[in-house]
Image 1 (cartoon, rainbow, N blue to C red):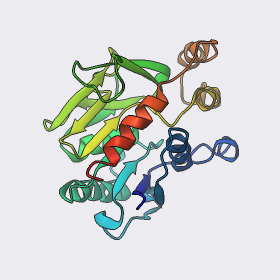
Image 2: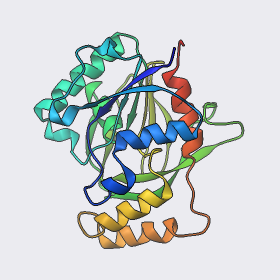
Image 3: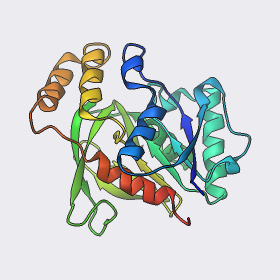
Length: 241
């Protein structure tokens, strides 16, 4: 039986890019398909108050990114935090990305806010904590697309740090064997990240930050480790299968 993955869509691709690249939920589906996984999916647009009837409606869950800020504390965000805790109590695996990474941290008592260092944009390198062997044999870190000015400033006590960088000390977190989260975006490939940075250049991403990111993104060697992270996430979501 195929794993039923519930995608809790907290945001949507910018209108100008949506026709070409699809939604964040569709990007996750493409990423897992490229990595060789065939899951069944249910998508819930939680920002529009579309929620599952139960934490047990799916076998595993993904919380996507969003342009919203966790500290806005909107009603749908409070409901999402409650659902995250219900899923955790139901012992079902969850993956959180960017906004998902942040709101899960908030749900477990962490603190999220704008980082004093400003925006994290473009390809970022993260170092793995020693003995974190899930990514791949011999890998000491990974590169992913970043797009955020908020991040986890105080991690929950229950969260274990798996990856970090000088800019983002809590780049990947794990809560027991039930929740795995990343600040950066494995679902964003270099082409989409490039178009997104161009789209947001100067509004709201500062032009100097955007230009620095674009310089790296347009190098012939520009690449992400999205496939390796997809395997890591898929194995985590299939825990207990």
